[in-house]
Image (cartoon, rainbow, N blue to C red; front, side, top):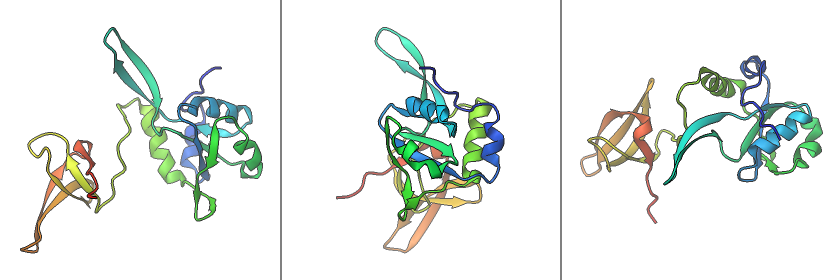
Length: 183
């Protein structure tokens, strides 16, 4: 079965318009098959991929992998919900408050443009302001703090609770990972 293009011709204008996008949660490593099947059913499908080099003891291989593992995006066609759910590999529609979740075009367009630009892109843990994180590398490696956003920069806040004082330092977000939760 041919793999669907991660960004078929003409999809970027769809991503940038105020079309409603939705997502299906699929079985592990079934993203391409589900995307292909939904395309056959004439849905507008978006499966963003990134390139990765995998090293084995005897070889290197370039792979295209989903940016959002286990998710495939589609536009329109909610009236054909049964066709979507009967697609082999589909586990469920992504829901929010008991309704099919709507993903705004303003969140989808940047992903499409990045994929089209051929920029180096890779999945990254979702971090919100206030999340506890650990620095992975550099001079601050191993330190834990809270994420703060100031304009277009990411900062980590370190606090001395006894004094009720804090400091914030700007860091590259790619150097952050979620900190382990205290049990």
